[in-house]
Length: 453
Image (tube, rainbow, N blue to C red):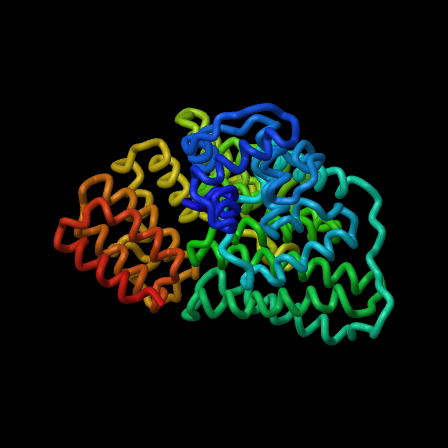
């Protein structure tokens, strides 16, 4: 689980819980807000997410971290904390084309920043961003141009070709996810450099914005495949902004759906539902695959909320969408649009049952990820995301007490990636630690420790 941004800020001041509580209380009084109890438990509850500080306490903290009070009220808790943590570009920049270009600098440098503490946008702040995207897409478009040394058309064409080649790895590849992630980051940084320093007309500017969106989405998807959901959220937010500026409705719809997954995994299912609703508002007539994808995201969010019947209905609608029209999946329109097929829907049903606390019903739907399934039994290269998907298999197997099977599934994840990425290593270890007294699990934990770079 990611750390709360307040925990990171407190640590940056090298203060314990009691010392930070004392500092907040002193500043609270100095600012004329009155006396407040300086209790360690308060800070602990704020950082755990169990309670939200009173507004005056937040204003005292904002004063400590040099954040204007109006930003506290504008962004709300905990979002204003990012203004003090240097992760604020996606919150502060306006939704103008230039603002979008400026915000891309944050993702171009994302992997050089310190580890991200939590999701950047949740609750009302996330809903506001989604509404803004819908509104911008509905308005007139002004092509983005810039004076300067001209960006050559063949340069853009080569970036488009390389980006497309990276996107094709989604269906299966023998290349390690970390290597693909490195290549996608390099393309994203190059495009950001061209957008911020080059000269181009409106047509080329739109092409570059769409490429920025596509490479940010690639980085997001690959970050998730490496077990880094918080980083994936930042990239997806950038993809939504860039695709919105380019007027690419289909891309924004896809990226909204992908962002909902980040909130299903690392956030609030209600936020995931709000993103699904926003995506539907953007594309009134989605393709069959887009419609099915949105229905599955809705189903998983409802399952996380404990709505068994609603989740089942949404999954049935996803299947009906594909039955109605299975020939409209065109990667040329949106190269990163997920192809939804029977295997995808089966995995979604398995995840839904798992979220509903029914691992016995979930496990059969993961058949293609098991040792007797066709996806991993054949010599065909697996998707870079397969090791991430195996986490759900392990969850079901551990819940059913099938420890040997769970250990085998983890070993398959290691085999698929060569060296399990640190984020996935952490995710697998967290699941296995409760069974560390079992010999098979103890040996596996040692293996995971050995494969961590």
